[in-house]
Length: 156
Image: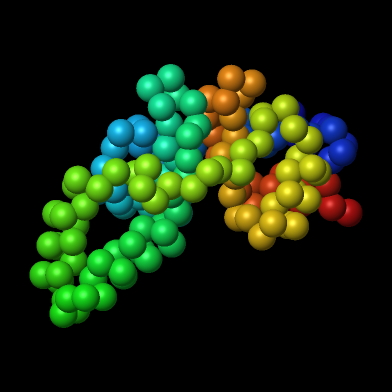
């Protein structure tokens, strides 16, 4: 239990154990369309990121909400604004693949110390990170709020 450990002994797995009970990170397969990624974000109102995984569940990339919005903006920028343009764009992206816009993820092993992960997030201005096992399979997501919730128990 995280409450019983000094903060210097807490690992990522300790923190995400509680988070995983509530929700799993949004994922799409590597051969999915951008439309699938948009639907995945829409269906999971808690996330701002979709993780791209292969058939074995190994993490291959990430697509942020910001990336999807930029993609929509570039596409919609050449048309008149309005709901019709948005719906037309949504229909068109069913053939665009997630691999066209995904980024290489910054990932963290579940056995990493939470202090190191916090440093990584602070120094690189990251709000969340995918957590993988030793085989690079996605096992969860850790965000800054999870770290704060865990850390506040140790503040005097």
